[in-house]
Amino acid sequence: MLISTTTSSEPLVLTAGSRTFGFDSGPLLMGVLNVTPDSFSDGGAYLTVEQALNHARQMQAEGVDIIDIGAESSRPGAQPVDETEELRRLLPVVEAVHGAVPVPISVDTTKAVVARRAIQAGATIVNDITALRGDPLMASLVAETGVAVVLMHMQGTPQTMQQAPTYANVVGDVSAFLRERVQVAIRRGIKRSQIILDPGFGFGKLQEHNLQLLAEFDTFTKLGYPVLAGVSRKQFIGNLIQRPVHERGYGTAGAVAVAVLKGAHIIRVHDVRTMRDTISVVSAISRHVRSHVRESNA
Ligand code: HH2
Image (cartoon, rainbow, N blue to C red):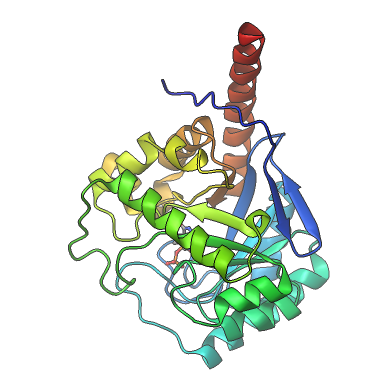
């Protein structure tokens, strides 16, 4: 069945610093703001604070729920950025966005020092693509500050991940990894309500792996934590439609629709306006189906 009809008794709640998010009225929309010269999709577009701030304002006007700011590309083969350079790119933008745009900020970083400075500047979510494996100080930072954390699956590192990704069973393997990372996070003092999971589309995944993860996305949404889907403009969508990065909007909408039907809680995208509409329509249909199922089971 395409539409996930699982109904958990307790509605999911996410805590991020002093903020609490619920998902009753549909998934949250996370807009991407990369202040990098080399991101695969928006690299070089928002290099000045003014450009970045204008884009954040535009996303706010288009209905974004969270702005995810990143200063180090994680595209396949990307070169790592040192802490000084990452902070130089990131901090003025986090400060400016926090001061001018009343939307929660997520920081896409693997370094605890960078995350700490971003939290001091107003970020309330740490999007750690290493799922707390990259920096030994990240878990304690998240526990101590109470911010939310994204635990994402990645096989290998951005430099190596697309060389020969292999899985016994991609959905089972990713699911086992995420459950293990949740246990680590909890042992390190992070509360369940702070955790977001992410199967990591494109991070050490072949075409068939990405399609399988999306087809069985409800496996992840049944784990009991909010789940993020980051499919926006990615190569696996480009492969299906033979289009370059900036012409993958409709293709992305197709993948986003499936993720929403399968119960995704946070959708990470570059095109906020189009995806807001996509999510509104699909999540209204999904909620309608769920309430119909509940009525007929009553
Ligand atoms: N994808 C990218 C970056 N960060 N974080 C999470 N949690 N999930 C994702 O799927 C994800 C992510 C890659 O997209 P983008 O930020 O546009 O590109 P780049 O890494 O080249 O900056």
